[in-house]
Amino acid sequence: MSNERVVQQGLKQSPLLICLVALLIPGAGHLILKRVVRSLLMGGAVLLMFIIGIALGGHIYGVNNAGTGLLSYVFGFCNVGNGLLYGFSFLSGIGVEDQAVRPTSEYGNVFLMVSGLLNYILAMDAYDIASGRKH
Amino acid sequence: MTHFLVMTLFALLVAIVFGAVGRDTARGRVLYGVKVFIEFVGVGFMLAWLLYWIPN
Image 1 (tube, chains in turn purple, green):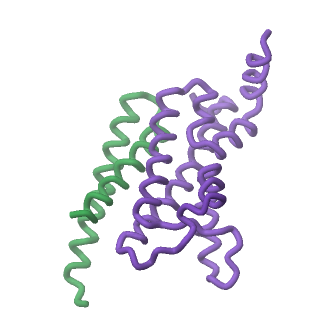
Image 2 (cartoon, chains in turn cyan, brown):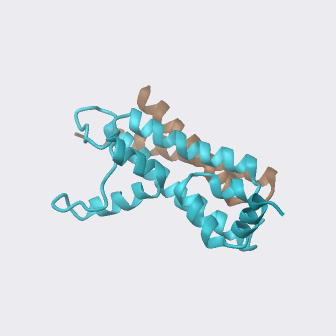
């Protein structure tokens, strides 16, 4: 049995691990579970929402938003759902600055938050499939 | 028009995810996705119409 197969079987037996991978990379959980079409559709939708959000002038919220109000923590939680996209954006400085002067910046913020929330749903769906609750 | 396009795009992308997650059969997924999309756009229009009558 090759190492790759062992790793794949290990992932299949661990819904939590699949959930974590799905959370980090949109659509990856379903891809591991061999739901290729669903993975591409849903992962693509989340990725596209994130890209459109950035293009519209939205910005990601940090996890620590001291001084910017309690609601910022909720927004931060939503944004963190984007997984590695959030990390990449945060580290590269793309979409970090607030661009309130742009008329579409609020749309962008909503796109970024909803893409994170949708990715949470994808991760939970992948968990359900991996644990046998759903097909 | 840009605002409408953005709203439609938003509804489309969310409907794709909801449709794929919400039902078990391929037909059910497509129908549910279409339903969610129509509802998003419909509610958007309704809210826009209601807000139109509220004075500034």
